[in-house]
Image (cartoon, rainbow, N blue to C red; front, side, top):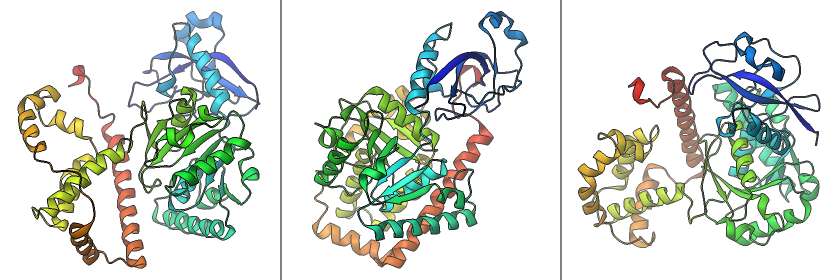
Length: 431
């Protein structure tokens, strides 16, 4: 890996929510570092900004700082997560150097194991971000079919204007290659994303094989939706490099990624994974510790459990139950979460609790036991869903395509609204 060198410079940074470059005179000048890596730019921490290096003796002349882009191939660290520095910028320099050494060369190969629906979506997400991707599976036909499927999806997305990233479909496809030899596939990889079925023994076997052939700087990541990191990674030599990166199905259209560490995962593994997910346009969240179901599925299962009981007790039909979510709760949850909903539905959280705590407790105490998800209720719900959407491959695929188009349109709407309305948070002074 090339040696990273740093030297001091100044960067004008806009307040949160503004999108002006360093040329804007409004932004406060912050001390930062920029990196020169073997004569080429390669950094995944934040947006690239041109900057003007200044010698240390000119610090008092900050007022005369200008925005003439420097000619050396550098980038400035702008991601807020890494702005840890003292008045002299020393701490930032150390963090920047270490992070650059750790992840600045992630433009090298990323590696995906197993190429089912989740694996194909991951490949498209990484390629959209400009990364080289290797797909691995033991079956050549599976790989060939995966590439054909990815090509078809990318072409359709490009034609409809929904293709992610600045690259064309052909340019993104050129970044994706296939391999049936595990050792050859991982060579040169810096991030490995496992996407095999939810089978503990299968996943442990894969990570056991990887543990024997990877180096000390490769991140080993799993797409598991429910298996705890302690069950997947304990006992591995490279356990400090292991983490769960749980996507939401389908990852290409739903950006959330839950990052869940093993108890022995090195903090830098978490930070590098978080930075990579931000770089490719996902919305990562970091869990402080592992927990059954992580966060997304715990919330999802709570909703499903009560929905099942309500239909089973004949309070509401399956069709109307779904409508309560799609045309009710889901409308606002697409933009704000349950805690902010509470905050806005009263004069803040404390006022909401004062008003509604007794009513909430009364309702919650009427919730029944965890359903078995089988028997008569299962048959009733299955019949209702099958009447609306027959369990026929072509029908299911058409409905999934419609769902994905809706999700893409929603993502565009959210991005447009954020661009037009700016940052959603208001300070007390701006209210």
